[in-house]
Image 1 (tube, rainbow, N blue to C red):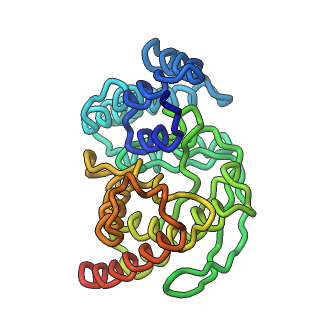
Image 2: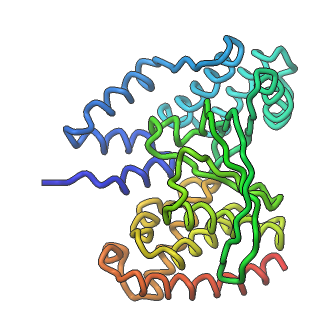
Length: 310
């Protein structure tokens, strides 16, 4: 009898394959309640109402409809984004020819700031879905990376209203835990982590610190290259979790804008080449073997990035 594998579900969500994730959940009786929630939200259009004023709720409804358009109805991302831009402009009473960047970072951000919220728009792995939170706290951490140790400021964010499209289409099961925007500052979604865990120490601190280091050196590095190197760093330092199998589940190249999925595909292919094993064998590999191979791929990428961007 087939057993539910959370890595399969998580991989489908990260790739934006909502219908496939729903179909996968439908194969397991213990996830019938989750499937019913999916059907209510995406088939019956029972959208969420948030604990914010009516105007902000309308803006968030526009993003919810976008998620249905692009992930459930599987509209072309450009068409879904155009419809989102039209809805936001109409709600904000602005010229519909304005760019998404202007609508989000200037006008929508201003509307949320007026109610005491921080707002971050733009795309995550090729899709829109803002991050909106209430409180911030700054701390500093010394982070060891393959190319040396450096201190980084980490801003802990809490009191979230909206946490991006992955959180929305997975009912909070899969979410972005943090990011770095190229200014050397690491943003951490505080509720997502036990700060003593390997998940925080490696998948947040080291992953995002590698982004910060790479962007400081090569400001034009592509999202795919950034994710490739940061995921390799996770593998270099991870001793408690089978991240390689998780990355193999996330691997995909259907959406060129989804840097996470494309980077995971490169890692899976690189590991197959180095280790002489098919990805079906990844779960049986010792951590030490994975860590060493990841270190080799990371070293190769240093030469590759210098040639590509230097």
